[in-house]
Length: 144
Image (cartoon, rainbow, N blue to C red; front, side, top):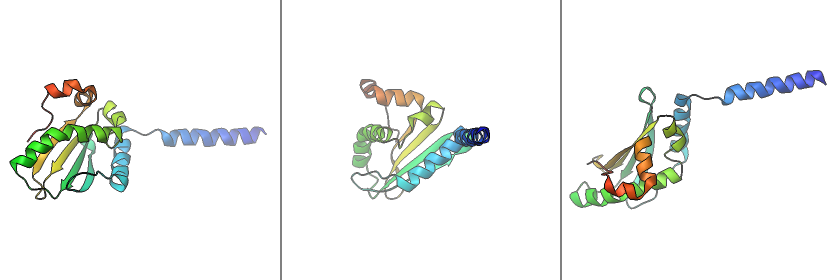
């Protein structure tokens, strides 16, 4: 019986060591999960991908569309981009747990020719603005 307890304890300890991941490993896992399973639905969206920048503790998310680069589209998506970011946070496509560890999410909404229609860096400060609702209206949230 004592031997079984020792083996069970050794296995539990090994599982504990395996489950302890550092931030860079969590970033890689998040990017892999995002690229394998994430889909964003919306007008003109064709694909989305994530890329890790481990030395900068940053994840870049590119949302590609079939939209033209013009002032009307830039204005429309500048106004609707914060709502898309909130939905991504809700769906854990932008991880609040990683943000709390200092990871930044640089999210791009791109026209068909890869021109930026909207962009936002989501860090702890911007996350507070997005989750705050009314405070978000007082801050510019998309850079063109």
